[in-house]
Image (cartoon, rainbow, N blue to C red; front, top):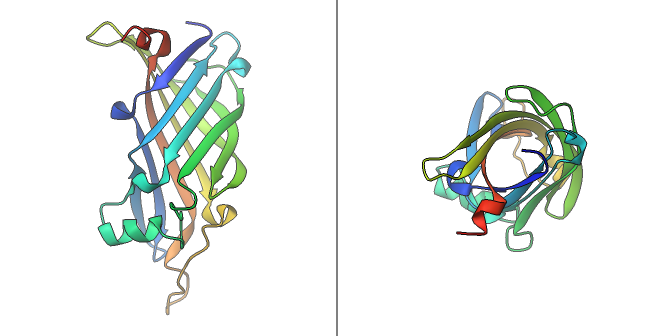
Length: 184
């Protein structure tokens, strides 16, 4: 399957993050609304590409008050910056099932764009029970939230800060062969 385009399936994809809270525990959350495509060239990975758009307001951590604070101007400011985007600029390394490769790209949060490197793996391709073709990918990266203007914090009496600076991002992506979607 060379030179194929895949549409990300939100029902079978997870866009998750974790951040230190009070310097010693990790709070986890996710985004529930997003859209994207993966162009895949297994023979020449440098021709592969990824683009994703995330609805920033779809953030959830399981705590309503915290989620509202994250949507506010202190963090994502979703009224003024409703989208988080990622666009790859380079894919390197062989894309082989179970092997690691790199996806370098531009992550934009609050209209601030920074280069990030995703350590990715290709999970393989298979046929679903309805005859559709699907592919799976995993990826991780870490960003400093301050680089994107997410600077709100609170000092702790014992030293340190309430919210850690580093955000660990984990993606589990399932995508459907786009040409098959045209007939649906």
